[in-house]
Length: 432
Image 1: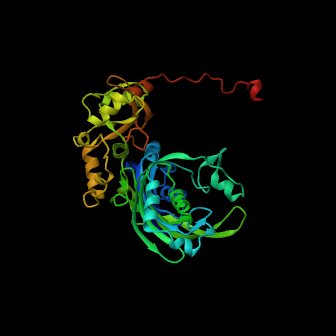
Image 2: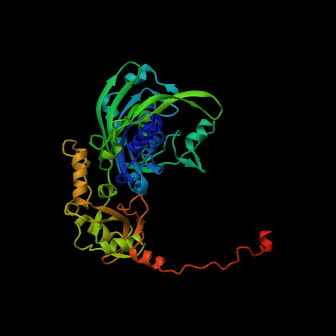
Image 3: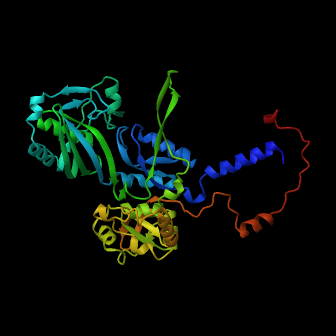
């Protein structure tokens, strides 16, 4: 073998090593986003690492923020809308004593409070302000946010020098715990942990706390530690990294900015969470048989034993016709006990303990249960369900499937048409 052919074979082998296997055609990754990159940068890093185009995320994180970013790829991107609505937990530092135009440390300081006014703010006043921001409240999002106004992002209008007027929205802050308070003459730093509903802007909470105290406030640190049942301490969470990279923008200018990437030893396939596991995490599940699975995949109404399923899914199916739940094809004995009611207390969820949820154990449980997500469904009658979102089978092979023997025999039995001897006939007018 020549040196050139050896180089080609080595290049082919290396290319085969980076391409994803058939087992990772779809799934969900829990990524720990680093500071300084956008959520889209992390999506691009996953797309590059897995060599797959269909990638998305369930909830944006600001460039300054770090923490959990739930990313789906392949057909599992159909689950992202259901993950986006999950509650979230953040750790943050609110700096009282000044205000910025973006309500975080990346913006420009627009106002500073006097040292005398800062000294008047006691710990009791800070705790009282946090209590008033707890529960069901109305919140005006930050002006530099992704909220759309007449089809345009609010931050795009602000960067263009246009003023925006955002309407208040209903949110729920289930917990606003202050862990510590540190002081200097010019500012007060409040370290807090906040659990809230989807659509809550933590930057706006810091701004509102500062306004309530009369000295202004903005965030200097923000980290998302939980999205639904996915925890930052979960062993399946994979950490992304950053590096400096030089770009040429559309104006032809050379700029440097951070780029997200994954280390070579970070095997993303080992951190993959199957669609069935994700569905079990975010919604109730019901088990169906092969016939019902086939009906659902063809968009037909199917049978499901809703009376004998777990209590939570039964309650949803009977009392709320608009509630969605997952239909799962059970091929093992482990999924039935695990499928169903998501943990009400996120701390009790099976994803939290990294000692008990290693990647090897996760893969082992998946192999034993072999549960396959068929569809997101709704109840349409007694023990009847109809598909809302259908998922393709996970057993399809990437290579071209062989035709059934009956089809092959029928094609082979077709008579071969003999030549009509018109090869040399005159061409039609349309051909001339």
